[in-house]
Every structure is written in structure tokens, then in C-alpha cells.
Length: 75
Image (cartoon, rainbow, N blue to C red):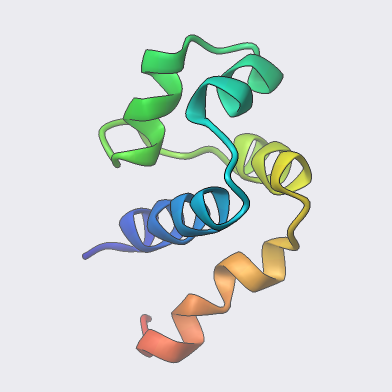
């Protein structure tokens, strides 16, 4: 798994734990649900700008999402 996959996996986990639909996140990002799904499934690279926006939508900290790198010793 690459860094992008780990990050979007963590975002998906957070989204699901908060019972937030992809449709809602997509709407807040001004994207189609399909476009957001491609980001979350790793088919489209996640931009820093969208990472920041998604974290705001999910009410989580970027640091918490990126913490996975420390746990996985990803370099």
C-alpha cells in the first residue's frame, strides 16, 4: 500500500465511524459522488487541498489522519 492508499483508507474509516455518506462529502467538496468515490478508492490522487477540506467536513485533524505513517513506519 502506498501513502495515498493509507491516507484515503483512514479517511474512509473516519467517515464510516461517523455515519457520513460519500454523497454528503462529495456535495461539500463540490464533486460528484462518483468523483469522490474514486478518491476514496485510491483511483484518483488525493490533493492536499482536498485532504484539508475532507478533514474539516469529517471534523478530524489532519495530524490524526497522517498519524498512520508513524504506526506503519512508512518512509
